[in-house]
Amino acid sequence: MPSILSLENISYSYHNLKGETAALSGITFQVKEGEFLAIVGPSGCGKSTLLSIIAGLLEPESGTLSFSRESTIGYMLQHDHLFEWRTIYQNVILGLELNKKLTQENIDYVLQLLKDYGLDSFKNKKPSELSGGMRQRAALIRTMAVKPDVLLLDEPFSALDFQTRMNVSADIGSIIRSAGKTAILITHDLSEAVTLADRVLVLSGRPSSVKYELPVSYAIDRSDAISIRNTAEYQTYFNILWKELSDDFSDKPTDTQT
Ligand code: ADP
Image: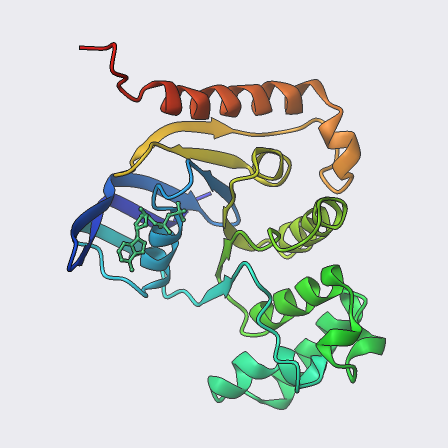
């Protein structure tokens, strides 16, 4: 598969009154069409900054970012950001409304997504009447409604409790996979990265660069989150990532080192 997105030597620093915080340094990687890429790294290493740069919300200080074709970006955040005073239907059409794309064809598409993702009978309910998992699915429909070529997922499941989180991430993972969407997921949860992604990038501590790349594949179907977690491949992948991230902490100089 050809690349849809290419990052070459991207660097970024924050400047404020207290000085400069170098967040990213020489980030280089490509994302293939239809690939599910996960990015993990120590807390505060610059993962959200990287996603904001890919989304075009921040301008890189140096380096180049290029899409192989004109691409619509869908962004899903940590909290579902559904508006409580709007119904689920009114929430999921919001992106179309804001982009002035509320055509009959797009409305039909959204109604189909609501059916496909099991929310049809909830479309006239308010977000507060839905479970955490359903809310997250509604947030995904709102993102999918604008037919994005690339989905950016910034810790989208972290507000959910552990049990729900496992099911919802598997659920949303299969939806994205079967839609053939290119996705970039940022997470601090190694299990999530290893169960969902085709490839995991490990970022180093700040200022971060890509320190390790792990291709992930399984002999069994991904939709069963529990079975995936019981495979030998899962254990191996998890351990590799765990070690890569632990190394990053033990790399830090201590008082006894010269
Ligand atoms: P992550 O998503 O990996 O936790 P972030 O991309 O949010 O990391 O942040 C990277 C670093 O940049 C952190 O040290 C953070 O404190 C700093 N940072 C983030 N946003 C700002 C900002 N607006 N101004 C100054 N520093 C910032």
